[in-house]
Amino acid sequence: MSNMNRSMEGHFQLKKHGYNINSYGTGNGVRLPGASKSHINCYDFGTPYSHILNDLKTQAKAQDWLNGHYSRLGLFAMAERNATVKLAPEKFQEEHMSYDVIFTCEEKVFDLVCEELLRRAGVKSKPVHVINIEIEDNHKESLVGGTTILELARCIVASKDLERDMDGIIEDVGNRMPHRLLYTVAFY
Image 1 (cartoon, rainbow, N blue to C red):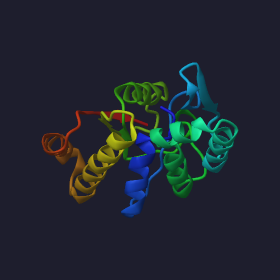
Image 2: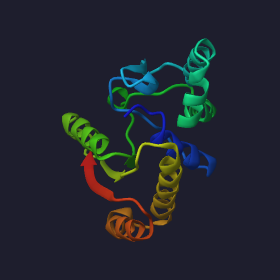
Image 3: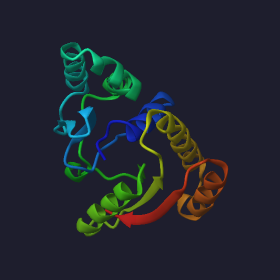
Image 4: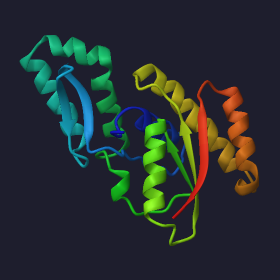
């Protein structure tokens, strides 16, 4: 939802393999674990990943135990990776580019993306394939999920007729990879 972990791992892997990629969050901002469940780190979309990283490091210097806590959660590594991929998290609902394929990493986000596309009323009559890869929100699972996203992208790019082949691609990748996939066609 926040364009920090799962979607950014997918973005990182796709970018590393030469794909033209953008990534977005769908929530109200970026939310990361903090010192406790009641103290969550919140950042606005558009806040540079380098600023997020520096803020986490500043907190860890002020409260030494946070260094180990944030390291165990993978927050430093995640923010460092993200800063190499793009400047800042962005919000999908504020983006007006059209895409051929949209990957989401959680069913709730899939629903929000589909709702946003429906809200836009399909005035361009341009189809978009929306695929959800259900990925648990932790560092280890985001790495595995990024591999599934990469495999989907490879199959999609290899297709000569995406409209005809997409159902088979979803079935094939769904059978070979460890993630539950959801798929629909929406319109811009």
